[in-house]
Image 1 (cartoon, rainbow, N blue to C red):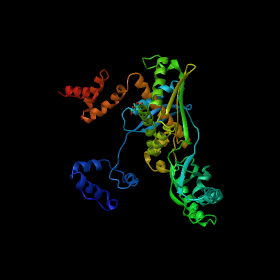
Image 2: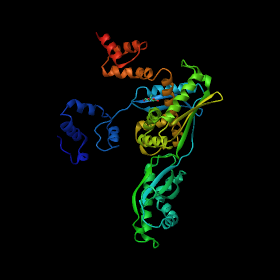
Image 3: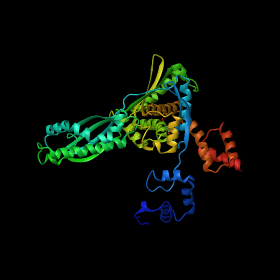
Length: 438
Ligand code: MEV
């Protein structure tokens, strides 16, 4: 049994690794060298990464891939994607190429409001509280001026502040519900700083208010925090083409492809087990771009899945229809992204990813990211309703199996050639590798 450790964060990186090896890795020197192998030779760069989080002992690499030929609103983009899953970048590139030949993707931001809440308890007369909040709004706004000044210069700031009565759902529970415009930043720090100031002013003004009883003066702030549910910060991505243009690259006629495709989307709309996997495919594209551009993929994931359940049942994020011979496939999702602040000017690869995307505004990044999700879902459904998913997936996974089995470059070449004409399964790859080796 290892003992709890005190003051771990104060140890140097080497000391942390030494402690780890002694307590959890049986002094395994190989494990230590694996950790150190991922250190960057450039000390400055390594220090930067060390300081992103606490207790850094190494770096954790993900491949950064490029998916070219994304025509979005008539402009070409190459998408930087950070992801470990073998087939995702290949699928995105394929979908981009397919839709490039059919007019490309259309995308537009629908709205761009972020939300934050001060959650508090209040026992007393609601109308008095309501009057107080109305009266102190100028003071609330004034108090955050040092925080909002720069944001206002950029055209953003606080949009509105509302008192919400939630006592039907939870005894004595109220909120200050605040809308923000954070321009090109994701805005988490900005929003949270404003909210904490609001909470302070609310508490102060309550205490000072001569109309409030002693009980009412006990208003208690529970917490102040932004919401990662952003249903008023949404973006739409869409593709469409005549049904007959869908046949290329598939054995199905255009009409048959469209019929099966629309059916597959309808299944995900009504069946939560399928919807989760369907939407996971969407998130393959979204997360990869979100990660590459230094945004918070957990926030995006949480918000998107909440949105997928907004009507009381978890459902498909994407939609498809055929009308007057035109196939249309689209998605509207909430995406709170930033292209300034956070990691965007700190992480060299994030900076580069944003350069690759030609320094987009937050709205443009929302459009690009939504397109990546739609493309990914299109590619997955296209495979699922035609060849099945495993053909493409295993083709990309072949290299992983070969690497796991320490295949040499020559063996890899032979195996890739062999499996151009044979079905890839884990066991067929192992069997063939053994054959080559014997
Ligand atoms: C795999 O990462 C994603 C898929 O399962 C998505 C889907 O089923 O639509 C292929």
